[in-house]
Amino acid sequence: MRKLTYSLAINEALHQMMASDESVFLIGQGVKSPWYLGNTTKGLVERFGPERVIDTPVSENAVTGAAVGAAIVGMRPVVVHPRMDFMMYAMGPIINEAANWHYMNGGRSSAPVVIWGIINRGGEQAAQHSQAIHALFAHVPGLKVVMPSTPHDAKGLMIAAIMDDNPVVYVDDRWLYGIEGDVPEEIYEVPIGKAAVRREGGDVTVAATSYMVKLAIEAANELEKECVDVEVLDLRTIKPLDKSLLIDSVKKTGRLVVGDGGWRSFGAAAEIEAVVLEEAFEDIKSPPMRVTLPDVPAPASRTLEKAYYPQVDDIVRAVKKALDYSWTDIYVPGVKTRSIKKD
Image (cartoon, rainbow, N blue to C red; front, side, top):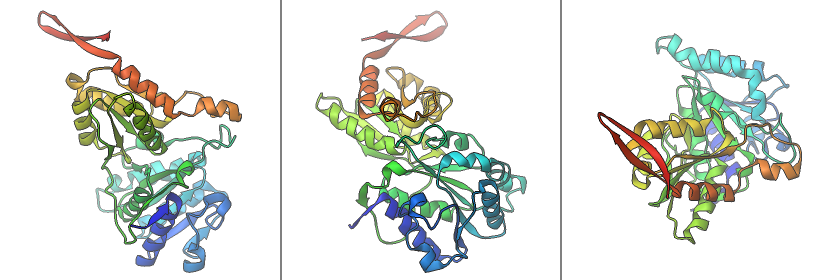
């Protein structure tokens, strides 16, 4: 099978969907600019023209509102936010309109819009240009949130998002743009709401999102040298979450580490751990661990960035910490409680 980079896999998805369906169009700031979008939109305006590849002024609220309105009347727009931070300006049309439209109309109408948000990390871009706010959108009923980590899934999930009859927030990370992987040439969908096992193991489950999947696999390979057998789950979609695969994996290994590139408190990692504690409490052998961003804004210093962003070693340490603990059952008449002991 031929290989493509992550960014060119997105580009191929857009080319193929726009060629196969005239209702699909792309709108957003910098859609013609490699500075904004790299090569993800390469060749689109030359092939489909400025009426279907619409480069807009800097007006996130208006542009997103126009895309949501077009979706309501039958189009399938993809509205791109080259820096996810500034999706904050578009919260009204995304949450109040797109997310609620199907429900408020009793299922008789929908808003099939893809809201494509790009995370720009590192490079001394600081607090206003480096934020990963995917958990905000996952909190909202009516929105699906996908986060591909491989070129194969970048294409397949973009196609699935465009074909979905309700709004999908498609989150990608520019740190992934240069990675290569096998990508089929034909149009295909990766199912929304289905995770994937990237590496099978029996000692601990590491469930990760986006670029953290790559770090998790590297950590698993390091831990294998110490005879630790790590199972790596690529969640791919955080809303709806693939609870079945997650719970099955944790029941098998008995331990969980979550890797997510968002902030620690009230984030995706916390929700994933809550699901496991609610549905697999009797099967886990140690408290779940989180590897996330700290609860502070992104720094503007390259030196501080090295401490701020999670690394492979952070996942390795979290796995070892999970392996250092086990539950012990304490029985009180009429009540069963659990306490923790360190092995």
